[in-house]
Amino acid sequence: MGRRPRAPRAAMLRELRVQNFAVVEEVTLEFGPGLSVLSGETGAGKSILFEALALLIGGRPSQDMIRSGAGWARIEGRFEVEGLDGVTSLCDRAGVDHDDGWLILRRELRREGRHRAWANGSPSTTTLLREFGLQLLELHGQHDHQRLLDRKHQLRILDAFGRHEGRVAETSEAFDRVRTLDSRLEALRRLAREGRERADYLRFKCDEIAAAALLPDEDEALETEARRLTHSEELIELSGSLHQRMYEAEGSIVDQLGELGGQLDALIAIDDASSPFRDLYEAALRNVEELGRSLAPYRDAIEHDPRRLDDIRARQDLLYRLKRKYGDSLAEVIDAGEEARRELQQLSGAGDEIARLESAREAAAAELAQLASDLSDRRRAAAAALSEAVTRALPELGMRAGRLEVQLNEHKAIRRTGAERADFLVSLNPGFPPAPLRRVASGGEMSRLMLALETALIEVDELPILVFDEIDVGIGGEVAHRVADRLVRLSAAHQILVVTHLAQIAARADAHYSVGKVSDTGEARTSVQALTGSERVQEVARMLGGDPASRASRAHAEELLAGQL
Image 1 (cartoon, rainbow, N blue to C red):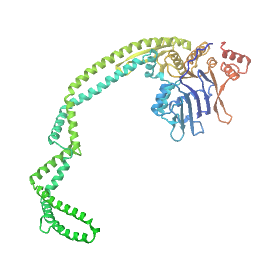
Image 2 (cartoon, rainbow, N blue to C red):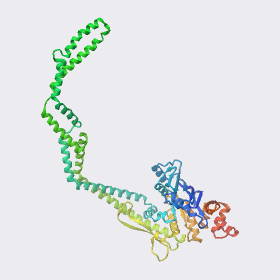
Image 3 (tube, rainbow, N blue to C red):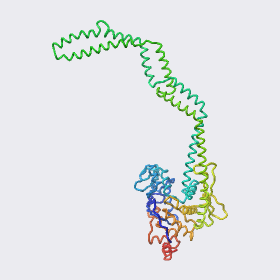
Image 4 (cartoon, helix red, strand yellow):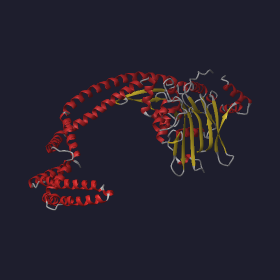
């Protein structure tokens, strides 16, 4: 059986290491591109590795996941992510180093203390692990790991199939524009309702502050002037007395200094070394004379004006009241007046602004309605095509009466994602009407439904890794070959990991791992072995239901591996 040529992959799981997880003591698996299968006897623990991957990308932990007798469990995955822009963006946003093109996720559970997680060695949150998982891989198995059951994801699948992502983005942007205008209109209308009372207050505030004609540091200047007026008589008496004693009166200090000049001259005549004292003396005399003369105009300028003092006290009271009402300083009071003036202007223009925004909102709503209508038309066409493609594939996958119906149901109002939601309904038995997936499909059927969907989406699905658990429940024979064919086709564009019971699938794999239980220490534990050559022949023979040791069973397995069956 031929294979489709594989395109180069942007990302894949290269290594998975599991320690002390359930019955696994320690297992390290190395994966390559293409299709990898895990097989083994029932109860050997094949699905434990599936559960480990689910936990690695943000699944919910529990204490019973930790191996009996161990205090911790650890799962680590090494992913090659070169060229995967979604992972690169997440790393940049979370501050995770990614320069070498690798992403190593690690999750650690502890019986005591907090569970922990890392991404490329940096501490991580479970939410971030989950976001990485959404960019890297899809798990198809247990219901709680299947995004297919989420209506939002069903709509994304439909849009991916129909290549509507661009129109979905335009619709989302138009919706946000309408919501933004609605918020602004609501704020303005609320302002208008409260406007009359608010405007009266603002007008009073503006008038009160403007009437005061404030200067930024006026209060400090008034305080200085008030202190001089309060002590004016004392200041006049003190300055006058100083003027008399230093300059005006007979025998003043200036006169006394003049008499001392003769004595200084006699001193200098006797000792030339004392001549520098003459400059000091003359400077002192000039300074004293200047001080004495200056005290007179200072005294004459002092006002004793009780009326002016009353005016200042009144002005200070006004400034105090304004600061109590509008700010801690006069500068803040002035700013408060300006802010009130601006708000008053805004209130005055609210009516015009509301009319302008209503017109803009009407235009934006019309644009949104047009975009949503066009998107609805495209979705109806895509829903019919996807339903037909998947329904056509289901009989090949063992569901002969299977039928998928992608139903579109309108919302009461247009949402960010458009005017409708998508519901995936399925009927797997004749005579039964289609019903929601969760109520109809078993785990194995769900995996095969996803296989049919993934095949339909193979050209548009950007997830690099797909993992299927129990995909082969209830099928065999020719259907098993068809399931294997589809997995091989998917592996041309994705890395595929499959937990399987079917020899037909295992024989087509690029890598085959056998999962078994050993109890050499008296306690059961799971082991995993990569199979090659005769080991793989023996495992495929066992999966075919024959005696692995018999020549006939081995020959049958060899033929299957050679692609002759």
